[in-house]
Image (cartoon, rainbow, N blue to C red; front, side):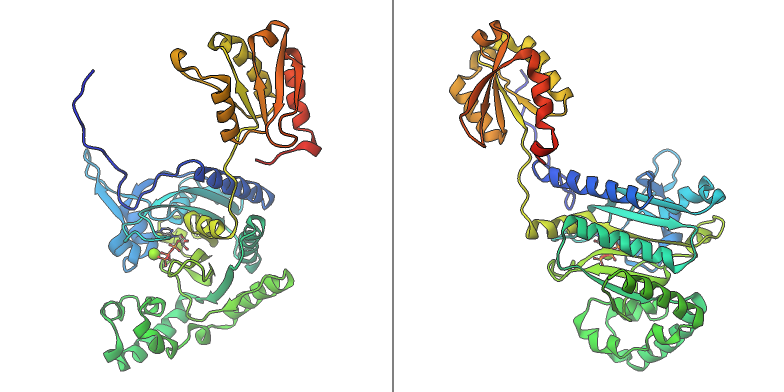
Length: 437
Ligand code: ATP
Ligand code: MG
């Protein structure tokens, strides 16, 4: 054996391992999302984690936090191509939709799940590798699809029984309206130049709208007195917003209009929204989205309207964890095997139980430390299983196995024919005995 000592390696800062039992909550959430997306007729799309850097620079906008300082960019070592680990997935989805002409036969409703990468200062709810689940509807111009997406997110919070999530809504209008507002906004900010922080000064002429999104408390009063984009909207933009509000009202989805809500990425127009909570400190936005009718053309595709959102999986799970502790996942059945020699026959029997859809954890070990019945029972108990199946040599010789209840009616014991094991497992799945773990 090589006894050389190696330095212990650890995960990259801001990038987390997701371990059991916590990973069970991730799978549970993902299952809920898949079910809900199917019911809204959204289809799954999977795009690469690495894209050409210009996709994000052009798509997200040069003067955004993400492009200015958060991207993991590198050069391909063979051909020198500029590549980036995706900081978000809307640009990638749009690229794929354009590349494969997915809109040739009408609009598409898509969703994705996966890791995103941003070089930020790691803290609660803010990581360098984090996960987003997002939905995008491409090719639909009307406010009913903005509403559908908001209802979809709203339904998800309901299904997850997530409490204390508020919806904030705004309209960014269309480019000419934003241009008129921008002129007024710059004039206002210039008149108060002494109150601008470094970030705001830098953005004054490149991206003044983003100044409204400042997290600097010292600029709060200034920002609150700034000209409101809402006051610059024309008839069509207002009609779009009102139609959306009507649908939300009719569906009992509460919202507040927040005239200062702008999004961190440049590609939005008309509808923008965020689902926020007060429970996660300054990382209170769990889901954000809006309309981005110009993005597809901006990255070289055929112009088409689009709207979407993405939520941060870590933030939603963090909130859920505060609100509802989840039981650790447990197998349904634990197989106790007094003699290691019985394993071939035992495992054959267990495969029938598993085929019936019942989860089984079997005893395992080295021959010399196989474990007494007592220690095996301890493990069975610690596993959280409902039932122990005891594959004793005598029973097996009779073609039987012993069944013992570990929770309800604990201790109750009965003999079961090995040949009836799968049938017994199937009875566990009968509706009245369904155990949702
Ligand atoms: P923030 O203002 O918190 O930086 P953002 O505007 O940069 O958020 P978006 O680009 O809109 O975020 O991403 C959508 C969602 O993804 C956010 O609302 C949040 O829930 C999640 N998210 C964004 N960045 C991170 C991160 N670094 N770590 C964990 N979750 C994140
Ligand atoms: Mg950010």
